[in-house]
Length: 81
Length: 155
Length: 92
Image (cartoon, chains in turn green, yellow, brown):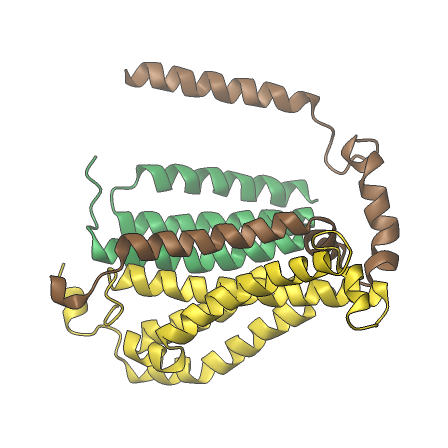
């Protein structure tokens, strides 16, 4: 593990999580959540858990973002609170 | 909000052509991930998701009818149940032939390959079952979510 | 109310961070998890299953129940979405 890279990815993970919670636009929130999943995938791959990283990249960053977007297009794009 | 998907957005020649060229390679990569899970990272779950994502990409670039020409609803339901049945069936057959549930070495009495080779082959059968189920469930979830349950026209 | 929630969240986070102090270090060979079960998998998995990828051997063979119920969970998720959302076009 390279601790500089680790620290950078972890900082970006926390920033992405906060942005996902606080953003009003739900489409933007799901895109930022995809970025969060991809950063988690990088973190798993850096720790040597390549299988988990693969699952995270396909399910978290790939398919679940499409599911979120297709659900948002059927409901509303603005968050109420 | 309604007019975003009334006139079919994304009906673009470049997107359609590139998706038509990409989809066979995505499916080949998904099959490779399932089959080569013994030697490299991957396995049934990841390969199934990649195979399902190929059909979702087809439904995104064209429309839902085109993806249902390649995988009909009936074939989708068949694959969903077939995958789960393969997994549980392998476990049940190995229990019937004198081993424990999911103890693949007991299948040696059915076809004599050797108990250790049966462990390897049993893992392969199980991964194929997981891949079938995950692929068809992903496509089914996308169809239902994007057409709000009617399965005829979506994004 | 919002301040109370913030205090509760911060206290829980501090407790969790304090709890990680007792965890073994990352990749520690003397950790309890890597002294009892992991050596058996690492030494015997290839001989017992002829699968070079230990993760696949553990997921598919040693922990077969886990993978089976993972598949069943995915199956149930699909069936739940279908039974909640599915409808005919004429009923609109």
